[in-house]
Image (cartoon, rainbow, N blue to C red; front, side, top):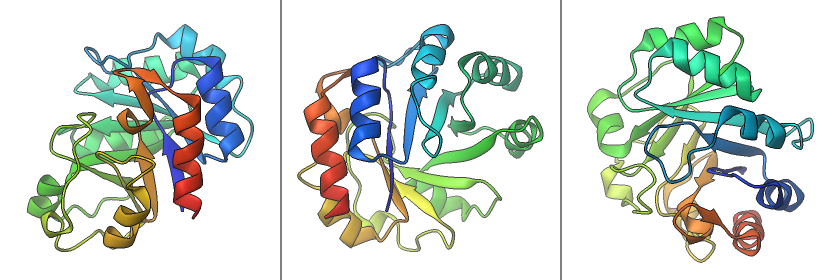
Length: 196
């Protein structure tokens, strides 16, 4: 089970995620997010991430030139795009040497039946809201490896993994003590719960 902990902004929480066994850590560059981090601050945190743990930059509705610049400045290896970014943005990111993740809501995925080359993250309708969605909202899961997101917490992640059967999970608000404030103890509990 691939585990990504997203929206990190401090050395303590990056270290907690890595030490707990997370496979990826995420840094948010989407304007307006309570988890927004500056590229220079993210670069200092990325430097703490060991080989074998993926560093992901999260973007939403930004011009692809800006996305590529911020990703390079932060030193992330993967670009995750939320929203309705065109296929060309993913191709540009891949062409620039980045791995990619397409984040899409369950309803949008069901409508589009998307089958691109990038990895998929299936989220609730409002990303970062902490809301879950039901298996009935995703009647036909992706045929490729995909991450489940949306309202995951240490106390519900095991049941949701069993219900949806994803390849991995992504958590952000579910390991926070307040909006945008990650709790190292909750991070450790979440990773442990996914491994159970």
